[in-house]
Structures are given as structure tokens and as C-alpha cells.
Length: 249
Image 1 (cartoon, helix red, strand yellow):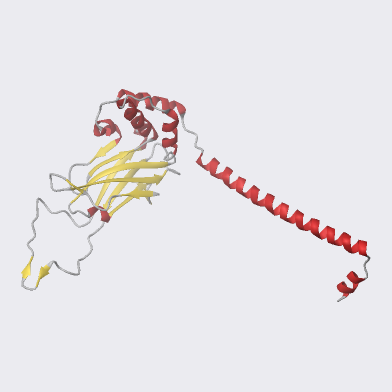
Image 2 (cartoon, helix red, strand yellow):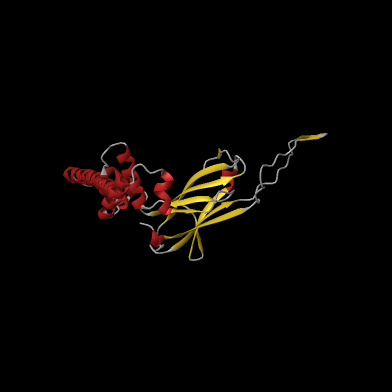
């Protein structure tokens, strides 16, 4: 009430000055809010750019490219042998390969050389930087059932601590081979943070126990026969691939 009486007693010019001041204040508020939004957007873009920018050893890249070119013509398994741990051709076992930045760059250069192309260092640098802050493994293991891969869990052991993967992919079904195994090809990645370059780590591939079936594939007076080829595997398997990181480029 007092404010209304005060406003009525003001002169016309005073009222106009107040109106103009309020209008200018409103414009200033809008401009300030807009600048604030733009600043936040630029800050976000800058932080993302900074996060994605990783200092890659250029000397290592050049060395890897020359190494890959010199190995053109080798099979994949021959090429990755120095970076692989092989535990045998049995259910639950197989081969694990640590895909270091050096090996990944060398593989790209090898592929280019075999196609009579010049390795593009910019493409190689971009691909390598995408996995530069993780420990990356490719895995070939074997199951005894088509859906064995659905029971696989992968984790890393370092300093008696279990580290879960930031990425893990195993197909829903294996590939049947001539020895009645299901070959399972997978990929797992773990955070590199707090793991020294000379650490000894264990890549664990675990086949979880089979779920108990609630229904049998049988009729009342007839049961389906079961054909077992070779030795039946245990229900629960844990396989450890040991890697001394100091041995791998």
C-alpha cells in the first residue's frame, strides 16, 4: 500500500526513469544469462576436448609402423604370438592376447602393407588413442555348449585385487568347430589407472555354473538319450592368463 502511494506521487519523468531502468535491468539480465549459457557450453566442449586429447609416444608409433610393415604376410596368430598366452586347446582354456598400443599400431600398418597401401599415421594415431588409457585383451576360449559364452565373466587380478572390466564383449553363441568345441572370440578392456607398466596381472576368464533346469526334455514314458563326445567339462571353470606387462611393447 505504501509503495503504491509512493508511486502515484511520483512525477511523470520519475515514473518514466523507473520504467526505463527496469527495462534496462531486464535486458542486462537476459544478456548475462545468455553469456553464462555460452560460457558453460564452451567450458564443456573444452573439457571434453581436453579429456580426449592423449599424449601418444610418436617414436613408439613410428617404430610400431615399421615393425608391422616388416611382418606383412604373417598369419594373425603368428603376428600376435609374442603378445599372447596360450593355455591349450581345452574347454575353458585357449589363448589371450594383450593388445598394447604398439601392437595395435603395428597391426594397422601390417594390414595396410598387405594391401599395398601407405600406412596413414593420422588414422593410426586416432585408433590407438581410443584405447590408450585401458588394458586391452582379445580372448579365444572354448565351450562345450552353443551358449557357453553366456556364462562367461572376465575380470583382472592385480595386487590381490579384483578389477572389473570397463568393456566386455562375448557373442551369445560360439562357433562350432571340427573338434566338437564351441570357439568363443571375445574382447575385454580394463582401466589402466593405478596399474604400473611393470605389473604382473592375471586375466581371469570364468565360466559360471550352469543353472539348474526346471524342466527335462522328456515325455512321461520316454527320455531323450544324451550323447557325450569326449570328456565332460566341470560345471564351473576359472582360467587365469598371467601377463608380465614389462615384457610387452
